[in-house]
Image (cartoon, rainbow, N blue to C red; front, side, top):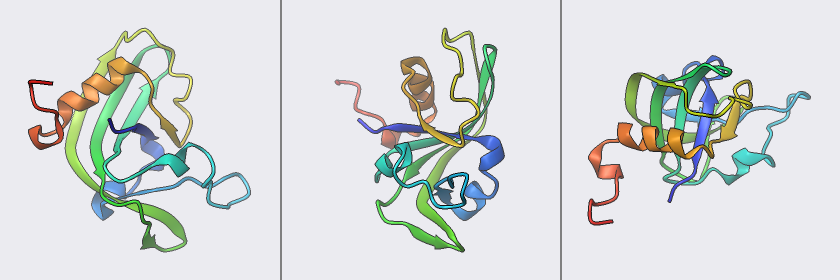
Length: 131
């Protein structure tokens, strides 16, 4: 099973146009490679979201990481992503406070959110029904 990583919309400018996701920087400006982002691998699922704590979560885009190896994008460290869904999916009342809503990039553990994201994926990324 792939890991799910959420990206706050304000930190995702240009990711869709460039088919990438860039790793966030620490407060001192260095690439933050040793936090949860170091775990992002080929075929993991990333999604761009906007959330209002204790209210709702707006999923704006869903993508699949295409390589474990970074691609060049100026001074940033970025991974290639195939953005497979774009739109506006609103999740309301999913029984969890969005405690990580302000983080630039985080690993999503909420199974309800993961299921909603899986439902947005094209059929070729889903497990066969017999599973």
